[in-house]
Length: 309
Image 1 (cartoon, rainbow, N blue to C red):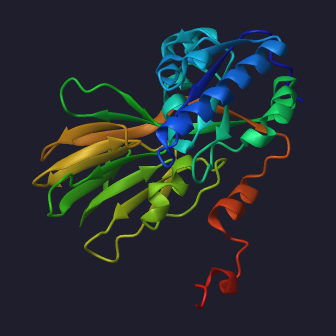
Image 2: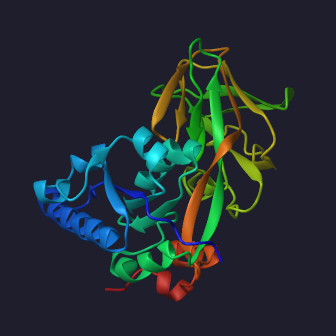
């Protein structure tokens, strides 16, 4: 069993749900953060609020812990607790992955593939996790660089999407693997997803689900013009180059967060990043149970049928 987390600063990152009333949600979230900060102190840890999260809270919650930037959190904290949905988790994970800081996800979103703890169980579960009763999982990231001059390296937890932007016409794309041309196609775009991202946009576009311990990426065309263009799975040590061969407009989207405009002839190179995301799960965590629960695999056809009125 892993060792207990030594006394250290522990960061709290939150985002309010967009589905609920802002005022009520902010109050509930502030109460939760204040309680969590108090629990951490009682267990011997120093709570820290992620600075943009602090702006979403009331004055009482803001006074419960000092605020810090993500860079400061990565350099000084031994753990990050994320309260929110998978989008919040992914945003935090991208920023702390290079520092090797582990993350615990508490679900306040819709599906919660990554944020597997519940608020109701947090008071009971958190002390056990901090005491070393956890299972650590490492998730692979994509590293994305563009041929556009001055483009930095971006990290993606879920996926990198190259698409037609706001244009109504399709784009012609070329895929090269390890510097060898593989194939070209015309489509709305293409998704390159990690195993983590295989249950996100790639799944909606018809891609396969990949268990997180599978060392692979999936390449999924979006609405391809030719029905023979199918998703493929490649080893995660592959270097994937996507080149815009023809397009009125095109762009690359990294986890739906960073956007890179592309012109004809521009390309995006994707490969496995050096950093990984460290997730801490309870000992009873089961990935396949998560799939069954979140995707409704336990439903019968009768249960999924519309109710007759």
